[in-house]
Image (tube, rainbow over all chains, first blue to last red; front, side, top):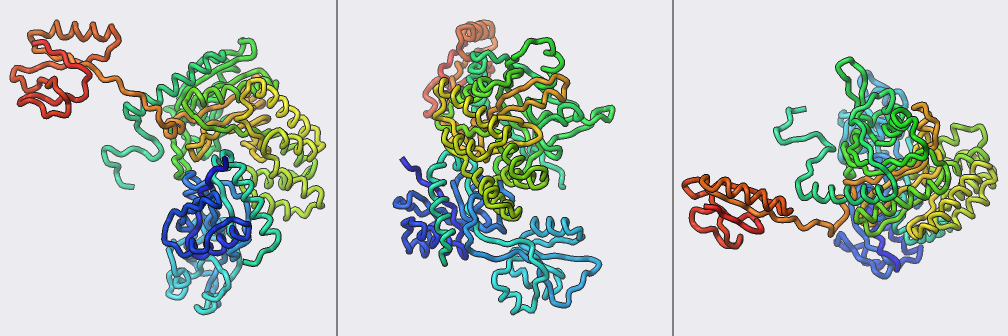
Length: 212
Length: 401
């Protein structure tokens, strides 16, 4: 008997793309699920149960095994460093992690970097041999250089629209980001057949270059 | 940091209250008894060891060891596993003991806490080491015993994944000869369980299609015996081939043990390179999010202590099993209360002694002159009679007055 896969899905930006990918892979996921406000959604036809989570919490659910698999951006995986399997690059929600500043930025004596990703930022600047003070913010990171809280920021850049509107420039990119399929260490064994089957189907869709 | 409150304790350690201890002891007892029946004799070693001996030899990374200084300024460690202390004992006190040596243990071990996910700084391991036998039979024996131990501990649904360090080493040697750094990054990707990163690294290496295909093929080497056949065709390297043959024989022996339905092959699973040298395995329980058992062959460890003999073994994460095994709560045996007035002290205490000799749990209590300390003998759900204490779950109350 096939077991139900508990899938931690990120609410928001990535959700629609991920569910579209699942549909393209032939999984019967009703469209109205996209609009629901329920947090746990049984999908018996697909042999799944969606758990709608805040994106940064997806790796936590998966690491503890309350979700068997999950979909989450590489940015979160890099920041959270959870002990999970990273099975598949889904190729959706493509963007990049970048260092951003005002166009006239020059390195000052005391450099401050504001970010939602303090671990990523600290590690990056440490590896660059730069001495910076990392300030953790929870949103509107672009504000920091404008009002003088920090001289640079580390943040996700998708189209660059927000940066342009705020007169900021991308100094350099740290790594590329796409959404990944992750799996719990135990589920990956105990529900190996189900997870492998899902992986294979998703892989086919990704290889076929489905436009989502 | 502010001064801790009186009831606080450090992160990563925990108290075990009586009902948890009862359950933990039961698991420990059942598992050790099982190991006993397989001829493994229990051993105890010190909690503290020298950093330079056991600390360095252990598979735990340096920053995860608890280090302390003794009064002479020598660095000590709290043991982070039982394998290295046992290697030390086998190479010293048991040096003359003929091989193979079978030892079992149940011990608390210490690792500096990482992050969340219930990782503890102090936890219990119950395990075995089989020293001095490098045959597939020995590897199969520890896996079969791990399966028996999981059953004895009350874990109903579990799986064992088995791999081999030699296969990947051999394949990498064949595909990327003399490129230790590239080999290292591929291994690191697998160790991080990062398949996406692994594929990315292959792409970055810009290898001819055939070579890249071989490396990519590793990710599919999971499943039953057929995974071994695929592996065999993937690499002609001698080490890779002999590793696969070894695993094949281990599987054969596990068939004979009639436990192979619990075992799956996973050649993407690799352990710590500096430690494990051959077969490695992990055990997973359906109810728990992280592995409950791990083990494998470590043929180079004992050499560090001066006795170069091959070894294999495993450890159960006993307190993780405790968290996950449900429905095994032992009905607590309720004590008999013997209460007496000072005049009947002798009679009361004698009665208690008698009861204890018969195997009952007996507790005693004195009834003071004012009579307010007498426990009522009636149903615990009824309010106690005036001036009497409530019956707190005694199976019987015997009163001498």
